[in-house]
Image: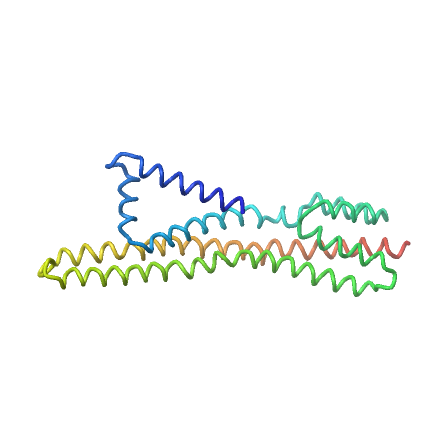
Length: 238
């Protein structure tokens, strides 16, 4: 949430800079052009802020070193190999990452002699898959935004064209093709804005999904396999 707040603050600062700059500055000209897009530029502006916020947040959250921190994994495996299961569980409770969640459940099951190795293995595999799926689910807002913003832009264009034809059809605009061209030009601003938001949103969505389906899933699988080997060895020695 704090990353969305940061993105909103950055966007607000940009708007204030544009409106406070000189009339002939580049930012002021671009800002005035966007304002001409009409009322639908407001939801498009909100979508742009949300897109920037989600991209920043996912860059921080979807990192292999954050999802599967190597130093933490090695420390827990070392404690498990030495039979220090209580210390390993305490360490997992102090950390908030997907691997710690799965490790903690496995160590809880390990304390129950009636639970077989196969049950622990299947539970760990299911939990690891669920944790990766949960991270992927939090990436879906980028896909939703990439679908919504072009439609908002198209809707704004339709409204703008209707408005332009109404102007031309009126007596003041009779025979004034320049008014029609100006109206259509302004109407297309919303479509261009919607595409400008949707393209990076879709690109980053696929980028993050590629990381999840590739490096993170592979690292999670290898980590869980090695952890279970250490756990079962320590369990047999008890």
